Image (cartoon, helix red, strand yellow):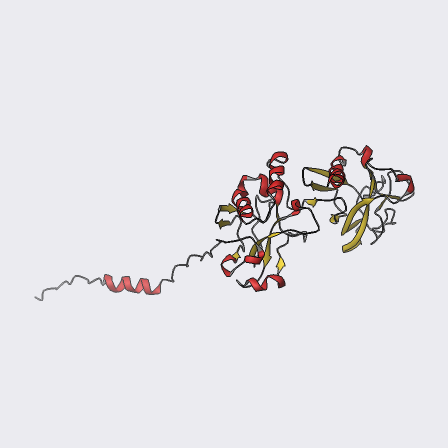
Length: 325
């Protein structure tokens, strides 16, 4: 009788193991983080090492000689912070318009494709969704602890006036400005208005004080049958003393001011069907008009700063500062 020979199966663990490794797709490589350490905020001293990439980052940290600072693109009602847009690559730098007071400065971001400072002049500044330049304003730098290291860097590089910073620290503790806030630093400074907004808030930042003013329902049709904004668009305007004789008054009495339309930034469109143009359309070079509630004749929008309501009262800060300096 033949004996049955049972053989124990041979399991080739090494072969199986090596096959599994070979057939397994490689693990996803970790995202490479570019350095966000910068040496200067002075646009004239930028080097390739100051080039940073903030694309898609929500709260990137910037490293400076004076410490670190966390910055954001903007905050919205839906999300606490929105990430920086794609291709946000370039240089952080100190910006100041020489035609405005020192308090008008801020940190901006110049977009360039490569770490080459010679491309700075051909680049463009990072913008908010409303086409205004992304800016960390001096008042925020002075008063917010989150930007203490940036403030120290600006002081160390002598890019800011310490007197302005000290005045902000005393009068504007912990300001919280929305990304789409309007800032003006002198009375005749041009600024943008969205004519379809119910409320435009103007942040007033003078050399010694700060405040705010409200422009409400400038071009709203107040008729009971309408009660809506008939137009959309953005315009560039400025305040100026009223040219009408009935508004003339000697200094130092506060003036009556009006709004001059300097430029139509985006085309004005009628959004109400079959609208009869009851509210006057803004015209470049002309004073901004309005249609009073219950009135039939067009009037020029004006503010009497001597008897200004609470929402306009802080505009006197700019008049008083102009007289003092």
